[in-house]
Amino acid sequence: MKNKSLIISIVNQQCPGCRSEKMFIGPAYSKKFNKMHKKCPRCSQTLEPEPGFYTGAMYISYALQVAIIVAVVVATKVLRVEGTVGWYLGWIAGINLLFFPLSYRISRSIWAHLFIPLKDGIQVKAKES
Image 1 (cartoon, rainbow, N blue to C red):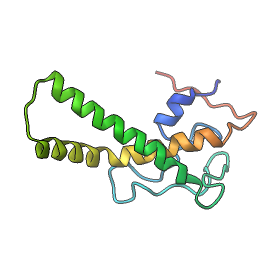
Image 2: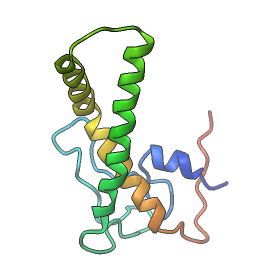
Image 3: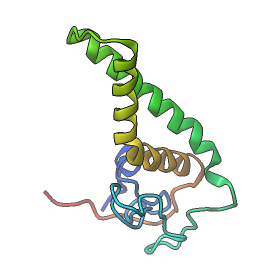
Image 4: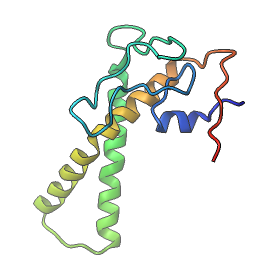
């Protein structure tokens, strides 16, 4: 048994305390995309240690959205797509809306992993492929 990687835990949106259980209740693309467990079902780690804890995750979300915008602009330049300013803004807005639930969850996961430490003595069984 060994602990999962920090990056894998962040991308899979798993509890920062034990890195095995999901932080969010349902799938990303559902009406409840923002619903989180109050505590981890496995290690009982509080996932919202204080009111307003995830306010700082907005900055991470902002950075992710900017990265998406840059990726869209670079892709249009590489593919030599011509369009008006309105066309570019439409594509950027559409792609940002498409990725918003994932951006929201990943930013919260990054923020939680920055400030909630991995619990000592908790071992996570690696999945066998």
